[in-house]
Length: 149
Image (cartoon, rainbow, N blue to C red; front, top):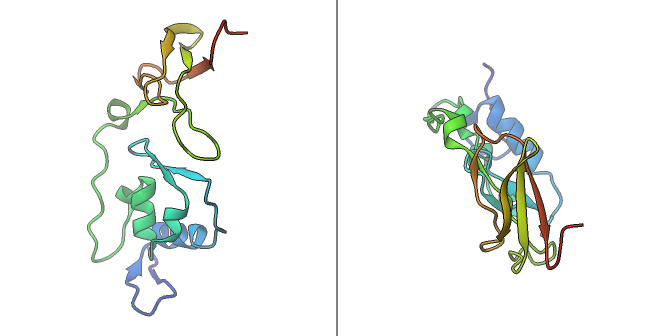
């Protein structure tokens, strides 16, 4: 594996994963409304937070794949034991301009054409979560009042 140093004089040697992650995300323009997803936890965070990190490892950690790091002098984050058992998914409805969770909506969830949740209210803008292992293809339909069209 070839190791390279980042442009900073004080940077430690980084593996290709960390180097490429840094080279991609450090060059993005400011995007104050954009959100990024941590692939390991399923949590959303402001995309501009990535640009605040000074190295690729911190960016990879925020994005949820630091476990794949192979840098010298750095212990990689532990890999999930069994990603299928750990990961759950849900939907979160937020206002596109403010990022605040949408309230007062009703939703239903379908998994492979079967109804798994019907006429439930959003809780803090979120639907109920389900293990990806059991429900890999969730579909959400949400509405404010009246019937679904």
